[in-house]
Length: 467
Image: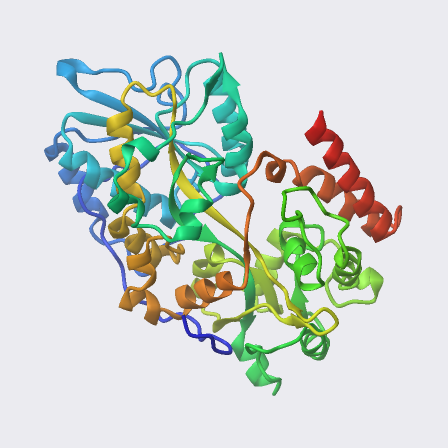
């Protein structure tokens, strides 16, 4: 993939109508959809056609359709019911594309009924563990790579919670995916999910603000210092040059790498206090206005999103999942790789996480569940997600697809991911967040130095791992 400076923002492609049976999810709450690209013409017609398609899916709000007491039960006439837990945001564009993919599969498999219910992403892994311990796990669920290590290590009555998919796949099916994506779905030797997408953050900016104030926009070889200087120039009145959620550990991990630190050693030992980590945390927290920086004190992820959407922030660090929101606000959105740090000689490097479809070890219909997982992570479905929602693909054919390569958002984030590092698929990775969040909070509040807080967090993590 070619490296370049700032990538231009998105130009609309018009709407996309789903195929097959599509049914909305009535009665479900949510944080609000992201909205589509263009109109949603055809939905009403599809809803009318829904009754004409055999084997149509059912969807629910988690009551009665969440796998309780019967994931994978047989239906009338020998039909099979697959219970699927979705972690897409309810009523979002991703949710619509997902349901359309489900409907296509459903229409082509009249003997299979698919029961979909939504689980909030942040609580989904815990919900799955509880359900599995009660013997009520869904047949299929989407997991992130940084969750798989912990879930993969758990046992119920001596059995793992997730199916090892290696025996179910041919070499050709495995070769669909990028090698790193497939590796990130492994725990030990077991392949516990089929990779359907990847995520990372990048430097996103409002190109119009830079142009209006005569400031050179971010480029491939931008440095941390150049970013700070541009941010200071662009900070005045109600406008901030840079808006980031200072207390977010996920974004700080990119800074840690840029300043020379490592999250884990080569043999998997936690190294939150590795050389450069304290310097990275000090530089990160120095961005806060209370420490003389330009980022308003108390900025959260939602604050950052709102400031950028309202044209009150020139730059943010965010992922492709919010690009549609910014584009709909008619902002001239652009992006560039995160900058270099001169003192370390390293680039600020985001953690790259992968999301994939896992099959429950408890499923009574593993063959059908694997077939659905293969479809949901197939090049065809990945391309639909990529072009409609800017979801980054893991299928090699889609990454090299002409339309994907020509899309400045997709190619830009895929280029940024090449500078990133994959989230370790280990139990230890899933345990990082609480100690690290506490360390950031302690330094932010002035209770401990960066060295002290990170050393304490690392020791706590080592003890929890050993315990």
